[in-house]
Image (cartoon, rainbow, N blue to C red; front, side, top):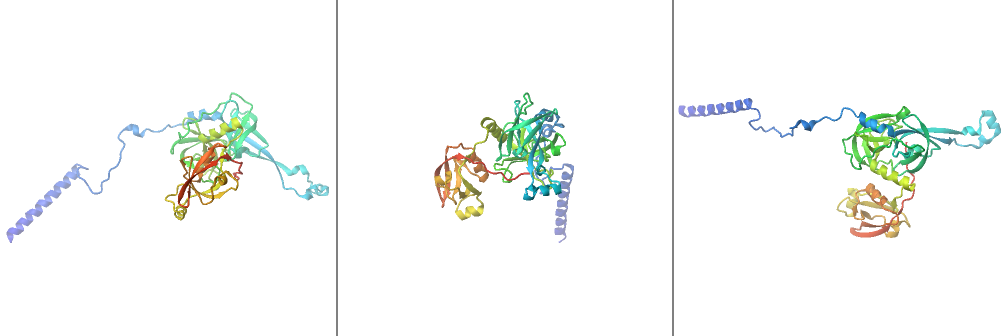
Length: 385
């Protein structure tokens, strides 16, 4: 019995010595022994991977500031008319004169010089219904401007002033902007004078906001306030990447969510207005809604791709082609329809008179229909502050 106990004690002592040796190795050489709680992390191995960005954007601002102008508009607004106002006794007693019914309402905004020939790009809502438009140049001169054309569907307008040799802004390449890029917003906030704010691109391709008919906004946290509308959104090199258009706000001031029209859309619209006097888009006369999982399930669709035809204008191109409510539009000329916003863009890009091939799903069957594109009629844009 004593012999067995001696053997047992020797085994325990050996185990203790081994554990002590392992602990010592772990203390002397951390990381040598694997542990159950360790994780693999990615670390910077070269100094060049953490290079800081520029400490100043003065060069970008200096390059773009001469191309951004202030826009002042005014219009005559008449007060509601009452038959009593035409009564001479009423006018005499109250000291009222008919001409005092009208009053001038002023508005302010910003614009971007896009050509040395005097063309200026701004928002449609800045100059909408204006009787008089004045453009204040960075050098302090103020000139009268006329409207070349507007596009309410994208909230863009082109003005012209009789001044040559202006400093035209440089346009950035389309699709050169990425989420996280630094951007600067230039404009005349609250009429205090031209200013620059800085932020980053928060998101791209924002739509379904109910601001414009055609929406593909750049979202930024660069401060955009009343008076900035129509001003420039530039990159860190001073190139135009967007036209400031709207903000999300509950107070009327900046809350870190601003929206700008991408330069790709702005340039396309601007060129059509200057060369043709307006923007021509395709149209087939349908009302659509996105396909939700519930709708897809009820129609027996395998995915939520495409859009549901909710309404068809009688005698319109789609109706004549045989499209009916309840159909699901899947493709336009072979291009997949993702949602209602993408469909709107696909149809609008087609030329009036062109024949488009439309792929539809109807009662769990697919079919192809050819529809002749017509010119999109002028739609009333929702009121915008």
